[in-house]
Image (cartoon, rainbow, N blue to C red; front, side, top):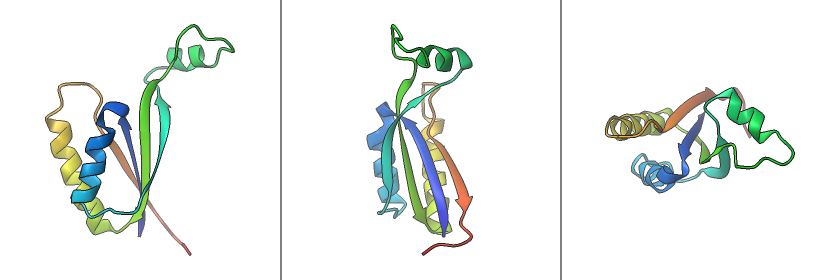
Length: 101
């Protein structure tokens, strides 16, 4: 069992859910987050009364799943990212789990 973490811009949230389904990842959690690409955006967002929103609307999903499902998902994400015309690819990372209950 491994911990899978995936981040996407909000525009691709529905697509990643379809990719999860194709990879047989049926149990997962998600949260809305703000994404940042450079330190200036973070400084602007830390202002008490910012004149504009500093981050990009994004989503983060995570799942405790098998390596087999992760391998399938990574292939699907790679294919998806290769077809993108924007500079906002789906990002994914895997963390090994030493113990779980």
